[in-house]
Image (tube, rainbow, N blue to C red; front, top):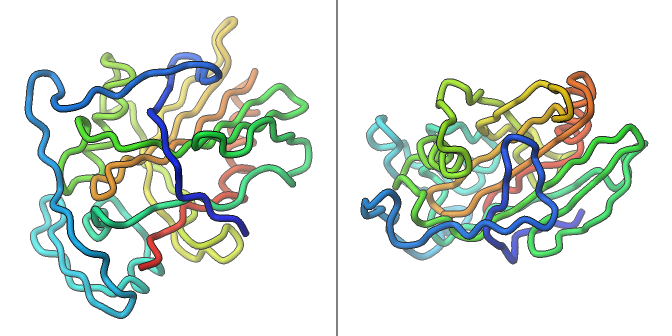
Length: 237
């Protein structure tokens, strides 16, 4: 099972139509809305048998855990602070062998694209560092900032917490990782779509899944196809 951990490029996303091909949006650097953005402290990677202790958003100090425990347990937003600056979060799997799907792009600059015979398109993306959007120690708030940067009118209550597989491979994954997802029903010439993202405050990078289909029920089916065949890969050191 091939695991992708880089390289990464700037996120390009149109929430209204999930029109990703050929689009380039450079995430700003240095400040966001005139405010200085705090960066999480950097530090050496922890050996897999070494316990990590860190602070979670609004939860005070998180109990020490080894890298093995972090990999084996659900990566909720509240546990995001276990992921450090020196870590890498990757991707494994995809729709290349899924019935009815064809891969048109294989992790070119961090992006894979799949199309289905029924007219759906799925994009799996790993971004570069999104420093200006990071809320130190808070993956959920960071992800909300990423959505807001792409669509300023978006309300946080429109974002639903969903889960994806968390493990070395989709087959071996026993835990889940929380994402925020924005869904739109098909209207007129605009396809139905779902955009699912998580910006990891520790690594400052994001994983993005997008699905667009002619009809609402096709999006739901395509999301389940992807959910069963891809995993977010935890740090390995």
